Length: 159
Image 1 (cartoon, rainbow, N blue to C red):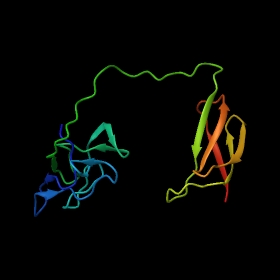
Image 2 (cartoon, helix red, strand yellow):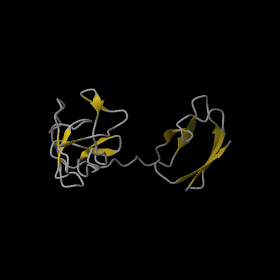
Image 3 (cartoon, rainbow, N blue to C red):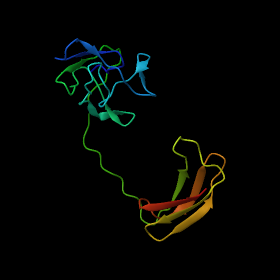
């Protein structure tokens, strides 16, 4: 299956076609162009509505040759990047060993992605465990050994 990218054609019933893919991934390139995903737009205004659920590009299914659009069209991918089908049996989740401890790391960032450096924090786990500290220059908080592999957490940051 050919991966779709910015500029690839969309064969659709909309007036003025064929149209082109006009939006794509910010950080993932296919043939030096942004990769197309479900949710990206065509020049007719339609969105790509199908993709490879098992092959995600920046949290959206990858668009490939034949992906459908919201106007009833199909993507005509023309890239040199080919994706095969997944193989093998079902994956089994790993269970943590009882009594094992795990070292976790948390990175605190603001809405723009800038790290919160030297900021006091408090983590309250569902288990009742409370962890407090100060982030380093990169906004990282190294949370020493915790016996709770997956649990809810409430994060409090003092700005």
